[in-house]
Image (tube, rainbow, N blue to C red; front, side):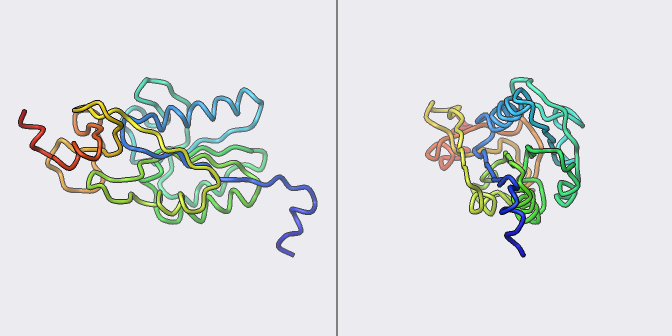
Amino acid sequence: MFLEPFFRGQRSGWIEVICGSMFSGKTEELLRRLKRAKFANQKVEIYKPRVDTRYDNVKVVSHDDNFILATPIDHSAKILKVGGDVTVVGIDEAQFFDQDLIQNVQKLALSGKRVIVAGLDMDFRGLPFGPIPGLLAVAEYITKVHAICSHCGNLATHSYRLSSEDSTVVLGEKDKYEPRCRSCYNMGNILDLK
């Protein structure tokens, strides 16, 4: 019977999503939660998309240079191979993963794991990004973090691309992106001419 494991005392898992624009502290918050879990002697496993090599190939690194070792993977199905003794699973830059991440994260939660996912909720065009909208729909806990607009100082909710590339995925940092509030984002390149 489907519910039988829960009646035998299996721990119930859940999904936490940390989202926001670039430079808002998503990875920093993910690292904080994972380090607290480790401090509490919980077994933790961390994954990152193999494509994200901006700071390091095998570390999840925040803009403040805090880091934790991670397993780079190219498809979200690989998170299902996590060890049975792992109680907390962290996933960074989730927007770069396939849509199967939504169902795979739910499988982990159903197996009793706490799953913490961090990623951009919108791409540079201001559109929902990758599997993040689906994860927001199924998560028990959602934290939206904000950067500060680089032009006016208000809360930034958008990642404004400074370069002319039109591909949805363009890896970069402050050389290619800046955080902007809704108004400054919508003013676009007019602000760049000042």
